[in-house]
Amino acid sequence: MTARKDWDTYFMDMAYMASTRSQCNRRHVGAVLVQGKKLLGTAYNGAPMGVPDCSEAGCMLVEEYELVRGEEGEKVVKKQRCIRTIHAEQNLLLFTDREDREGSVVYVTDQPCWTCANMLANSGIKEIVFHRPYLKDSEKVTTLMERKGIGFRRLESYEPPAGTLTEVHH
Ligand SMILES: [Zn+2]
Ligand SMILES: [Zn+2]
Image (cartoon, rainbow, N blue to C red; front, side):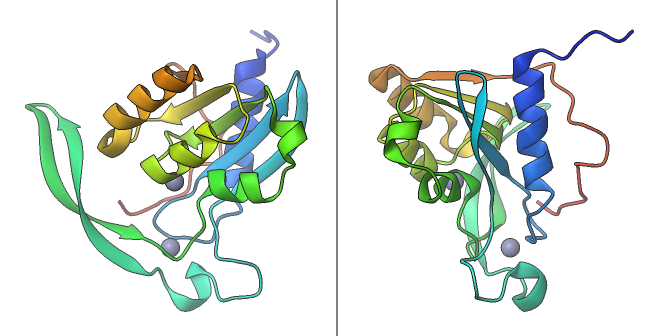
């Protein structure tokens, strides 16, 4: 079957393509900004320009407790997180203009963390579309988006393009 890809799939594919540029071993996140059907920016998680990234200097790890949904329901587990990188969503905001963002849509491979969601909520965008869930901050992020009237949806049946998923340690 050669059905043409819908726009959601098309732009989420672009976000996954962007995520392949990440040099962090722990998380590859990509995000794109879309106005109408036009791509206005792409970003991935990475260290600030001109300083060593995770592949050169190693990840900068902190330990945190995270809510994980398993077979027996939700449980809290200790996880390591890399804080060397600027998150993809934040880089996207750094490299796009406020006027361009008004009423635009962000496609991001992973459900935004609280900090990114908070910034996106103040960035002028009207909708966030994500693929992989991130349960740790999900409840408060969902509440925030409802309050702000920002669309927030997950592409449940989406399949990332072959070759864009890299082995990462969580
Ligand atoms: Zn890293
Ligand atoms: Zn984030």
